[in-house]
Length: 167
Image (tube, rainbow, N blue to C red; front, side, top):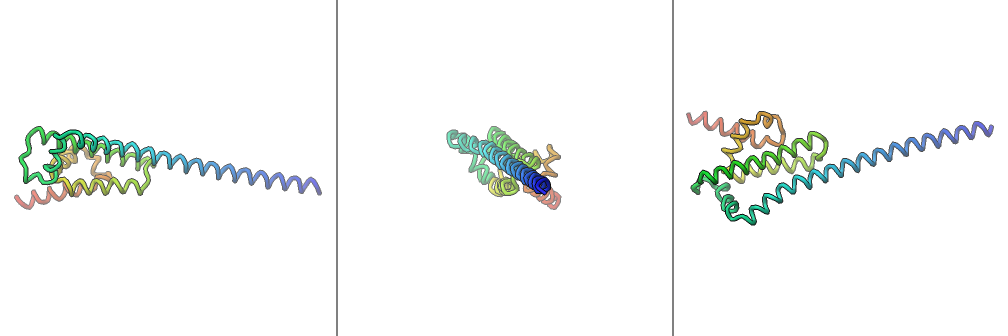
């Protein structure tokens, strides 16, 4: 009789230890995901911070932003156009990194949606980047399938339709 009770007790303790181990592993996986999400957010935010730091400390770059916001009201030099193209590429690289991090499970949906909103805001706020975004869009076909680039894809489609209608 004691042997049966002892055996049942050992089996129960075994099950409890297995369940405890699984719970610990689940907690560790969750913590790892949270750390990865935070690390990606920090890295992507540093890209924005660096851009804003340069904008604050460089009068030449700071002068570019009013031209980005309303390009029709300003004369844009070849140098400024080159800077705008570089800025468009910089944003595309940030959004491409966000898409890759999200696709790899390293960035939460909530955080990823912030980048989608950011791309939408850029397209709306800076018409001076439109030409450059469309150029990049035609160069990089992978943008068409990336969710984060949908605002740019919609811009390119809209501009193509406007061009077709005006002809």
